[in-house]
Length: 482
Figure (cartoon, rainbow, N blue to C red):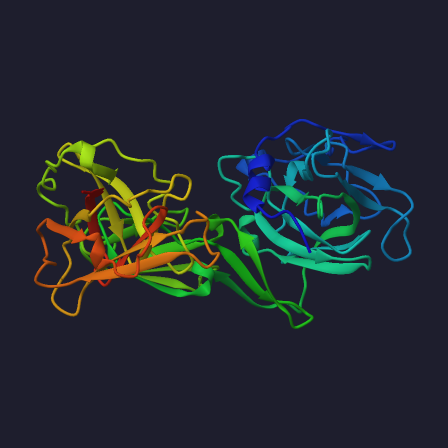
């Protein structure tokens, strides 16, 4: 089933807000200001209504509606023909076709003009059905149009619906924080297989449910993650942030939440600190454990972090090549004009490599961290090295290079059809070990192409792979020559 495949794009579009788009729909004026007098005499804190209902056969008087930018601003209307149970009134949403001139998706938020005190509830509930089987990209509450924080946002993503009414329950992670919540409900939905459809929502309200259990915060997908080679200055996110709850049906459900529902801590703050957004900042060498709590209870997931402190960098640049440029095909070197490379990190599945482009004095160098293997591609402009005799590379590593540690280089040629596959691709991998491979010194790898014995064609070289057992490698002066 196709649905909006990039939720980030919807979130980006949501941020282009039409902040004051307020609609009078089918004679239903939802702009009426909630008339409420508040007694603040005697320096008492103001109180806000505890109204549970958002839409029960109509809207409460304090609500306004804002459509998201680039959405179809007329996607929402009140339907007087369809309703849950014995009623014939509901909220109807007409998702546009892809590339509709009226908007590329349906989305908006319902706001309380003065705010609600929701501390007496533990869930937002509603009923939903659609004209067909579909996936609603996102529904939730807490979108109060504050683009800087959205401190109380909770989102149920990729909600599966069909033509039968179903009840949806979205837990309130920490009701004590919701003493004046303005964002009472929001949604975002995109076409299915490029075509629009309709869905209905009814009986939207906050409830105090007695049959919810196991409410737990979640960071890092609930994993106990280990990073053993962090460095000073690294920034690490503990996202995704979620709440997990056991529903009355017995189903365990997770919803995305704002990090402001969580309290983060580091067991050794001198090694790393963590801010209110769940971003870890590495400060010094050592080991720490990063955890979080919600409502005072420890969350699922934690980060075991070891920092090496200041990163090991080459103190001097790699040796400058002196070969005649007419005899060189350079992929990466300041000494020559380089051919076009599509990417120095293909991010293939299971690759953990992170690349960055750094300077050693004035020399440009590629740095790889957490290297297990990394693909380098130049398929858009394959390299004809048929007249070349050698492959050259300089590397530097701070890691232990004693046997059996190694560094490997693989070259791949796409053959006469210049396309991956087809039966004519050729490749070969060589392994560099001691005594050539050493630590804390620039190593020159200068290999005859004839050593790549399986690489029987070299007219359409398209890929290269670095791999091995040394996770930190600096790379320079990558070229073929004759």
